[in-house]
Every structure is written in structure tokens, then in C-alpha cells.
Image 1 (cartoon, rainbow, N blue to C red):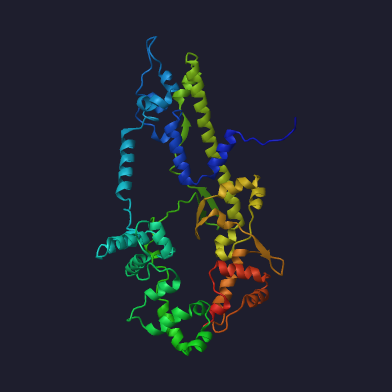
Image 2: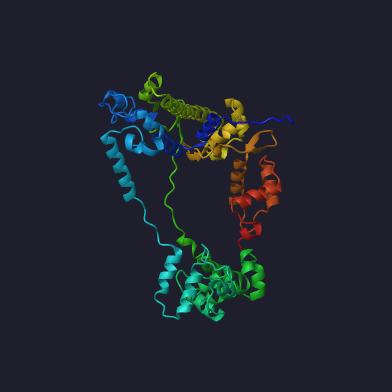
Length: 476
């Protein structure tokens, strides 16, 4: 025997947390699903204003109540809902003809405006093979190579592995011929096995500085990547001016020839859950975007049947469970609304200067601070802001954008890490490009601006912002 403590979460609590975490579009899908599965749940917006009394109460008007004893009760069908609900009740509350027609028009418009599948990178290369007359085995090897190219257009397999995986009677000589065939296709550089080969494949006799570029790419690519121009000058005898001119043409080559064919899934639209607007006094008001949310209610029709003592006990139990489920959903949605508004208002109140002056004035903020202010657990705040977006006068941001740590200035003032990043960008933008600042010198410059940060912090943020090292930023 042993004594132990366990935390068990009630289904109602689990559902409440799940609803809180859903963004607005996912919540609408969840509600539509519940409306189709739970006959006790109705959307008051879809009640027909001229319908009969039963229709207004959310009941199934198409099914008449049995009048004679011995006839099957409609509640016998409710118990076997999975089998014949669609036949008897048309999968939910009866909608008006205008509502059904409008929904059909929306779906048809969506299908007509759906983008067709774009031609893929591999499709384009395979179609170009049709114009080449070659040995069938070589052509099949070329197709095999094409479908083993990565998204950037590189072949990561060596030819020995290509022959092994291809099977059959293919030889490495045929694989080499197939690879040469692929490397002649458009875009130039496709089928390369490394960056050096990719760039060399793109050179033509018409390329400016052709001979110089071939030498630089073949023998000095590593020095080019690290901006070691004086070392290249010493090894090749080319002047710095000649090397820089060749570099301008090198930058026009494409190191990732397959990337331009990446499938575009279309514009990703963000639907904000909240809108922040400034009033005449400069204060910010927060409201939920829920104008088009269904207005949920419990069907009065089935509530009456539940209170009716003559209702079959099995049917009464079924109705009671479904009504309870519907009530939990409605309460969870209302709780989500209240929690999200409280959390968002607390965040906006803390980040008022951010909205007044811009993102560089963001304040350090932790979720625990909002949890203490709102009076909830920090995990509740985490779920409330997860995948939620807010529309502000400064733009649309994820709610998580307003959270972040920071550091303390020499004067004892807290400053957010985002502000440190902006300062880093400003310092590098103003530096002398012929003698750029090292990370240690950037630390000293920030210290002169009353910001104390470690060198490793500067290095981390510089790399996160895709800023090159001082040696690579140097302009000769």
C-alpha cells in the first residue's frame, strides 16, 4: 500500500483550456463542428424570423410528434443518432432556404477562386528532358537524378549511390552522362553537387570577367566568403579593384537555382483575434473580433422535452448529456472571451509606449507579470496568447510579440532585448565600412550609450539579425 497524490483534470476544465488556446478561425471551425454533431446546440442567427414556433426554438420541425400509442417515438431515433440522424434531422438545426443558398454560393466562389497547383521544380526539369534524344537508360537515370535533387537544386548523392539506388544494368559512366544532361537544363546551375560546381555551371563565355571569376570560384571561394581580398590579391596577382569588379558579377549568380521554384502556397492571411484602437484622449481600447461568431444557445425544444415527465427515460438521459455538453461549450467560449480580453488589456496597458512611439520602445514583459495582474495562472496567459494576433495602429502583431526579457542600464532602467537589437542595427549602420566595429567595440559603444551587455550577447543578436562579422563587413 502507498499514499500518492494525483492531479486529475475534469473534462470540463480540459475543454475550457482547449477553447482558450484556439485562434478565432479554429474556434469558428470547432463551433461549426459542434453545431453539426450536437442537436441540442443552436445558432440563434439562423432561426427563421417567419418560421413556426418549433423552428424558432431550435427543434426539428420536419418530424411530427407521434400521436398514437405503439408508434415509434422520435426519441428512439435520437438514441441511435449515429445511424439515422442525417435522415431524420438533416445533421443539425433546420436552416432557412436563403441561408443554405448563401452558404452554397460562398463554397462555389471559394472553389472558383482556388489557385491551381503550380508547376513544380521537378516537373519543369522533366519536361525539358523531352527535347533530348538519348539512350533510354540514360534518360531514366536523368529522371531519377532530377527527383533526387533537393529544394535548392543540388544533388546530394554521389554517382555510385545513384547507380546503386537506381538498380538495373546502369553504369557510372551512364550516370555521369545523365548528370551532364541534367546540368544543361534550365535554370543554370541545377544538378550541382556543391556551391563551387553550381557557380561554375552558370559561367558562360559571355559572362563579364569570365576568366577571373572561374579562377576565383575554383581556387579562392573560401577566401571570398570570408572577404579576404588582400589574401586573394597576393595569391593571384589580381588587383583589389579587379577582384571587386568580378565580385559584382559573382553576386548576380544564383547559389540556389531550385529555390525560385519553391511552391508558393499563396498569401497567408492573418485574422486578428483582437483590435486595439485609440480614443480621442489617446487611450487604447481593446475589443474582440467576434462579430461573425455564431450566437449559441440551448434548444428550447429539447429543454421542454427534458422537463416533460412522459419523455422516455433513455431519451431523457441522452438529451441531458447533450445539453450539458452544449452548456459547457457555451461557458468555455464565454470564459475564453473574458480571459482573452483581460490578458490583452493588461498587455496593451503595459506596452502603451510601444504603441505611442514604435517597436523600438517596447518594454520588458514576462507572462508572470500579466498573470499576477489578471489573477490567473501563468499557463493560462500562455494559452491565451498562443497563436493569437492583435491589430493595432502600429500594425498587426502576434500577442507573444509583446513579451520578452531585457537588461538594466547603468542608471537602473530596464530595457527590452528588442531595443538592444535596434541599437545594434543603428551602431552598425553608422560605422566606418572601411574599418567596421568588432563585437567588442560594439559592446564599448553600447556602454557609452548607457547600455551594459556582454560580448556574447552582441554576437548572438548580430547572427540572429544576419549581420556579417567585422571582417566580412569590411569594404576595401
